[in-house]
Length: 197
Length: 121
Image 1 (cartoon, rainbow over the protein chains, first blue to last red):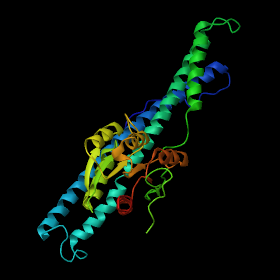
Image 2: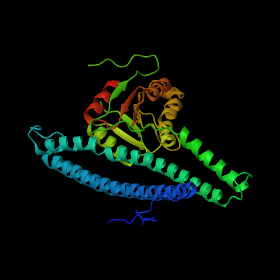
Image 3: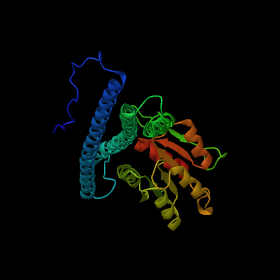
Image 4: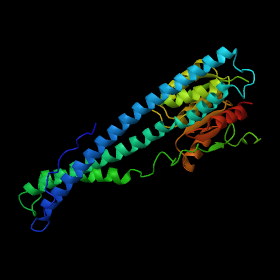
């Protein structure tokens, strides 16, 4: 079911001409806030759908594995005679392949968590910006220091520093369905890795 | 030959896939859901191999490797880091901590069994 993400607060026909800069910035921060919240909701929705799909895939995997075990038991052991031709061997190969692909929801979940964190940081920035714009609009005179305005500026500065210092590299390097690389170091630092076959 | 393997990952799905693949090859598997849980289980029983995720709550994989290497009974036990992280700096950190190898998720089940065979022989 489609989830509502809110209505536009300003008509699309509004023109920038005639608006003063603080009003324009106030509008921009409102729009930023609204879209960040919508993105957060969509990410949450994606996470729920992914979790449900993963649960159903894992259920199917377990059921297939249980049937495979029953087939092997019926054939009288772990290694049925003529294993290569036995139907269980084909099912087993497919389950093995599935065990690689069933790891992707975990990787995607990690990507989603990273993106949620970034959107949350943008939302914080948007909130601080809006508070600053409001404080600026109610400040008595630009020349005289206003305690509330200074406090809002400081809050924005702290949030900005946090955003600037946070990394933009993804924790997940995979961009396709291939298996990841393997590096063997050795048992301890300085010890040669086991010999390749 | 059958080995006793401790798998440490906060993802239940990854633990399940690891257990499926390792058990299919006849290995015994004990699961732990974070580094702290893994350390406790490693103290309670000696394992032939530890496969751990890196990014986990309570204790991450590299900290777990360091903690295990500080124990006499795990000085030379193979420890594999299985993670989504593939940055060289992070791999170097894992190597310095005493990890035996670095595997990037998703793992190929056949390749994983080859690595298990190689590091536990």
